Image 1: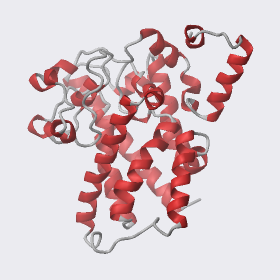
Image 2 (image 1 turned 180 degrees about the vertical axis):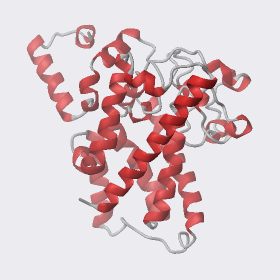
Image 3 (image 1 turned 60 degrees about the horizontal axis):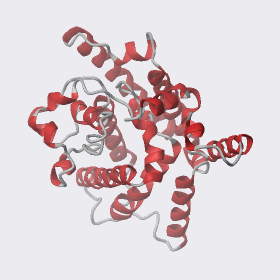
Image 4 (image 1 turned 135 degrees about the horizontal axis):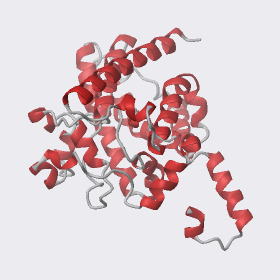
Length: 308
């Protein structure tokens, strides 16, 4: 077993436990709200059950099998193909020396480029129908807890890697494990807090860093609001490109009680009721299942029957 994998797993778990405990104390003692621990382990909803499954996959399986599991999805095969072509022409992997000598500079540039790449891929997943079908699994969550960020299909994770290759890896090259660790720690903490139910907007810093309120508004089931607040680490992209909703700018508290999930309650229930197989969504196993289902029910099956 690679010691680096074990080390990164230990760091991720330590951060997770720390945020779990802090969030539980703050939500229950200060805001009198249910914490992530309570949502996940006491009187769980189907949405929380799905989050637990993804949590197990992301924290226990992916560190060892992520590259192999990528082959189960179309975006994963595309990502693998791009890497192969770049390696074939000696373009990837690459290490630049003029930008990465200073690790602090590298970390800062990495965050900017990585988050911009993630912002672009996030917008595309909301605008392109096929990609939205992949991404809507994440939006089917009907409540927020700190591991809701793990609710991503393998296909979505693979697709996000593609813009990262071009905007980050090819531009900056690779740094030492120490610099990469700093990136992982900061991003993990922001992502965990972002998916919590904490009523925080970070004040003036909320125009730069994506807060829990900022991201919760993005998860609303209101069709006219869901295509906004795309920022992952930085919210500044939404303010620059005007993809933040004016009603959120007027009052960030508007997100505190907004209903979550897809704008179709039927589809939200359908996805969450299948929480035990959710990580297989949009893998070839999922496509084979749909093909066999269609074959069994006949070519004339309606879309309504197929979604039921």
